[in-house]
Length: 336
Image (tube, rainbow, N blue to C red; front, side):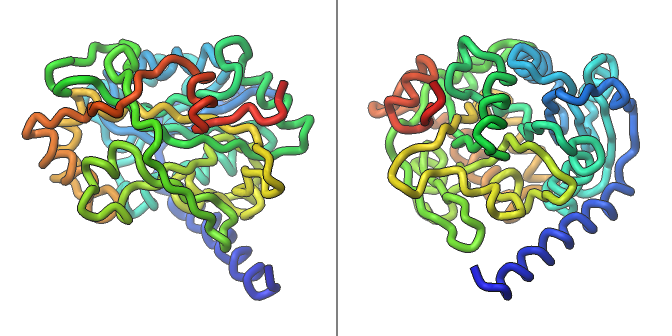
């Protein structure tokens, strides 16, 4: 990488940090319990809106994995989300009614919170419909993974976003408050993925799955990116650029082995496609606060309103992380 490119990326990172500082003025602390954070705690950062039904399972899932504290930004919920989170003793909560789109889709807000509270901690960035699955997750806590990453000198851990969905019409299988979403959304596309390397940012760009197959079939190049770097040992010099798809400095995105082997990686099981997606799509089409004028939600609304079944003959039923490793969707690498 030439000096000119280095300077450009450094300037971009500094601009993201300054932007995050400005955007922090939009946040109001509803309850701040960050004085309870201990030096070795794993932290989870989330932006959300109207997710009351999903929150009990989301919080319990990550608590059981070993997350000690949740730092969350509520962007104008009116379904009881805010009061519920305020009552959780391991949650610090900020609220804002500012534009989600104008905050780089929440990235600015979370970059600031990570800068202020996340330095020297392993920090996980996850939406409330994303569930990190890592090697040995069924027998080892998240601290086992972060301790191993520390021993290897690794500062980041990647995970492919894996869209999960039910068999049969989505509307026919209502989701209950606090329910494990994968009791319903048990299926996924196993093979239709493309991967290319972004030489500027050093990250892999992954597309495919059910959203490309069904919702973006006419424009597959517009399918959402599935590559993420959700777990980072944070520094105040770091900044996410686009959701958790890319982070600066760009060395944090080099989460693959260029010598022909495999680095350990995980999967974010993505439980977007429950019956709640219908109301969510209608709301987001009115708000127009998502990427590309809510193009994705427009496709969801059009397709799912017609009762489209996301399942197909090639769909695979989820079993466990070892199954996903066999399929090549994640890897334990040299972590024994």
